[in-house]
Length: 558
Image (cartoon, rainbow, N blue to C red):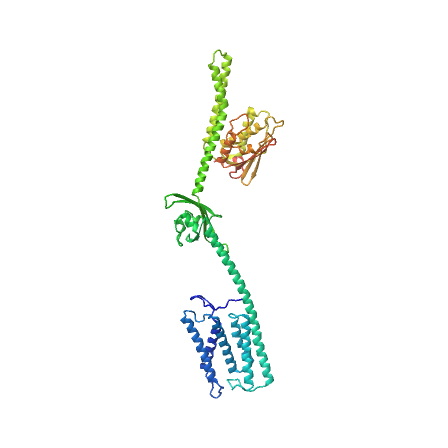
């Protein structure tokens, strides 16, 4: 059901004109202007013309009076009145149409169509039953005036009153009645469609109101700060959490750069949102930290209309992270100390035993010579452990440059073949791509040497030992793989592979893979390890390429 416009809209609201009043004013004004522009011929007097003009003038004056009343109330000249005034205006319009048709001649069927105007106007203000009632009143007025004038029961009025052919008059009345009822039926159908549209509109408005209310509740309930700005960085909205986090009011119209350290110009050229962090001194003197993201704010068509900033209070989180980092550092120091103590315990025990032997009396020269040999060997072992430990804890600067990869592999192959510990083990090399890579030559050589050394150690006791190196170019990178069929590693060994002093091999210091990981990180490489017990190990290095392919003499390192 459409809502009746019984309540006047607030002043200044834009509304459609009130149709019944507009029709009555324009019709009476036009009739009076036509009469003044074309005065009647005295030789062709029309019955009751003065009465007709007087009634038309009264209708015009009444319309002016209605407009004046609206203006006195501070409303528009054609504001929609209450439901009672709507019915009164429609009654006046029907009476005006009846007067006009009576003066022009009730036997002129073409004038009956003028009843369409009040009937059509009623569709915008009345219910369906009342629309039918308006049509019935129009039919009744037209029929009764037609019959009364035709029967001579009313005195002549304008062009009505002259007796005519009764048969033709019946057809005229029937045709006029058909027009009125057809118009009423059409208006009722229009009204029903308007009711359906109104219900749909009300449902859409209710849904939009619910979504808007939900949006407001969500934004106001958020514990994160939310600020929106226009494209110029001027604040357009801010939720309560934003003011609570920043501990300050955020007036609309103020620029965001005076509040948060975010570069909106940079955000416009980024494909995704950007992160920002900042700090401030709270009113109580404490140092507070906040951080968040800024993203583009877009309309329904996808065009950027502003910026969306979402941020949180990070003071406690940052403090927790700092405590966690400190705990991790202390734990790492503890693990390194324990590993170093474990590695030094055995050679120091041997050194102390030899010292006690040399202090004793009655030692043969052979025994003394053997003790001195053990002292030298174990002292060298301690020195090697400490040297590698210092290299690990204080790594030298890495100088990444353009390196011809086949030269690096050739040096590696020569080192393998000349190492006596590699006797009995064959290094199978796949064809080496002639590419330039980003690397520090010394660090890269150390990385591959440590990987091959671990592969050789893993082959101890294997009947048919194999060590393979394979290479493949992929998406601007060179995949270098070292594969063996040795003892392999379980999940726990893989987890602690790069932890210092976690090696399970009998020889070595336990720092080899830790140094490998350190060098790989410093050179911008990547390392992946796959292994299973008794099925060997596969180590894959992702080495960034430098430029295009080319032979050794196509360029020189830069």
